[in-house]
Length: 401
Image 1 (tube, rainbow, N blue to C red):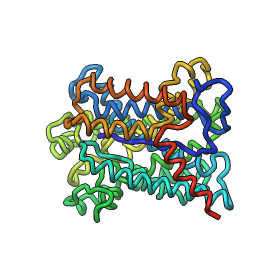
Image 2: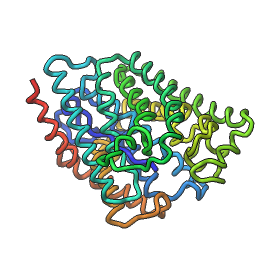
Image 3: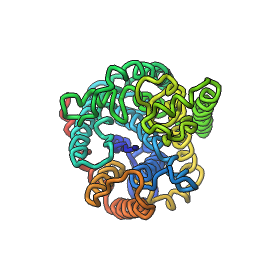
Image 4: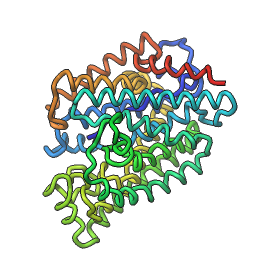
């Protein structure tokens, strides 16, 4: 149950992805590795939605499980990165420029809320994340002037506090049905009861903002970032494994109260095959499965997202030839909004009802078709079709004084 996208960052902070025709002018500021990370996250999203079910086991099942939740966390982290790119990465924009940047973020957020509502109305079995993203942008916008240290501190604080708040609120919201963002109780869904509740997904966005503030062009910074990511992943998953095995009855409690009673509760330290939290069973607070909405889950998923981003940045910097080889993936990453909408519409047109659980060839078909389209389109145009429309819409911010 993973869906997600990050919108193109900021028009003045973009460069064309590597592999663009020689002589193409490339404004300073875009990190090619970010597009690589986005592209990989898009493929992870496809795997989570139109790939085989992780429960089938084997290598394929394992790879499908890796995509669940972790790719959405990566997109959420990159959403924070995008906010900082728009509002000024190395130094926050101020004055009229700052007000225009804020207006751009607000316009994007409103469009995402509307587009997410429209896609939800198509009736696909996918929990569309766009409206959630729109709310994320609005919630973190007041913090855009903070530095990396302050943002990281707030991210850590929300990762510790917010899951406990959600746990306390769950019994009160137990009867609330997930609603479309435009419904009267849509805000409750976006904040608390949906598949990507802002209360426990904001830490990813804040972490992305903190990372974006760093000097990512420095190899030493990227190394420290990668080590931090690995450390967080080990702490999150390892801490959950220890807690579930050391606390008497924890695994049994999860197995009897989850979204899928009797599922592989012993895998709740890393896998959604254990089911999803329901009720007020405290043992779920020890889980780190991607959609368990716990502190350990947030720590682990943030670590994975940071490590993947650091690896992508390092690979693009250390191996220039890889940029051309990875050109098609970079193209997908540069138009992730288009790719996201494509896959929702594709699921609707193909009438796919069982998600996940589609045959492997369906997943490969989505990946190949989107990759070919993105590669061809990026040779002809600087932005994806929906990214171009988003850019036109946000250009209205220039009228802000």
